[in-house]
Image (tube, rainbow, N blue to C red; front, top):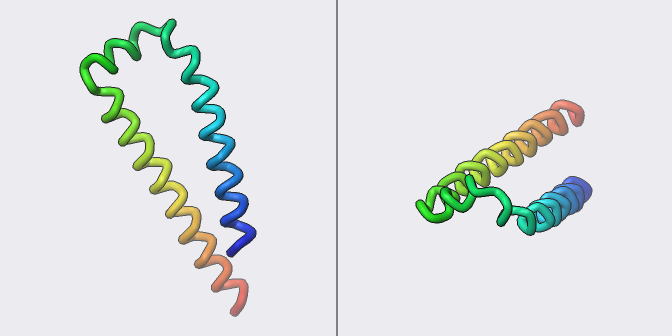
Length: 72
């Protein structure tokens, strides 16, 4: 369990660092400026966060089921 949690945190940290690095280049793209002015960027980020969270929960639940089957 701890091994997977450490891996999860490492992957999450890498994703956050990549997003932060990409955020510096956003000013050149006018599509994101339009989405920010309309407030739709927050909806997009909420949907992305929900999907990613759902995927992590799904993978975790599958891992628990497989571990349970391996122990039998």
